[in-house]
Image (cartoon, rainbow, N blue to C red; front, top):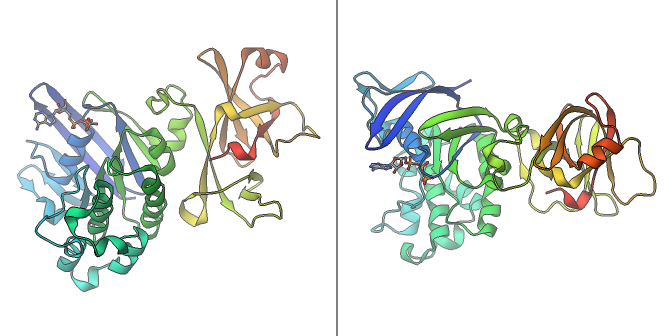
Length: 357
Ligand SMILES: Nc1ncnc2c1ncn2[C@@H]1O[C@H](COP(=O)(O)OP(=O)(O)OP(=O)(O)O)[C@@H](O)[C@H]1O
């Protein structure tokens, strides 16, 4: 697997960046942490926008920075999108989009302008002067420009911060598809845990200039104290392949022995192999000791309790579904005592179809 090796000890005024790590460069990796913890500095170091003395940055077997060797940004083949679009005001909208593409030798072009224009719905923008585009529209254009420059790595620094919810919802699935189809690894900085949950495969947590944790997103979500959950609900992700709607409009999402019924499936984020990821709040999962007839809740999934964690005033019950995936239920102490819940017990997890996002 391609890896990104980074070693840097850098003091800048009152800020210390201390990184010595190897990150898997595949799929989508989120850099997450408090404001000022160094996410952008790390991204800029990877890009070569910050010249940090004595740092090492290796992408696959390319030494981008090592000892006296320093490869400048334009030779690293990195697609960059920052909070500010960085578009060139003296060029037209279309010229901006094609800026990097025209410099890529034809045999190295992996994405064509028509693909990117369709993916990001840029066609209506191309007829407008650059100055008339909104901040969100400029970001979409900047993303298209980065993709067309044939990058081997995409680095996005809070790329969706300027987008309204509707535009964000429209773009996220395309980013997922694009990464899966092209295999270009993507790192993005985000403050938005929802965005991370929807998009990331791996999570890198930063605090005070250091990486405090790096793991798969699934592993990170199994820790209720993960900073991703600060101020928001505990969730689990369920990965499965959607099948045909039934005559009631319900959509089954299948994963080996498990089937989860959705009441609605408005904007699923596709993942590789036609999978979608579903988000289920722990608060929306109830437990029963046996299947219940005459119940409006349509999902009754057999599961085994693998962990019981005190969480705030409640308990977080971690369950293993028949296909091995983790599902979490937030339950009152009263219910835990009433049902005599213990690790190893077989239960049924009840999930309302309309509570699944
Ligand atoms: N040009 C600069 N000169 C001096 N210090 C800087 C400069 N840019 C950033 N810093 C400091 O470096 C630290 C890390 O900044 P950085 O932008 O990497 O954090 P961040 O986690 O990306 O923050 P945010 O989420 O708010 O964008 C901060 O304490 C910041 O004040």
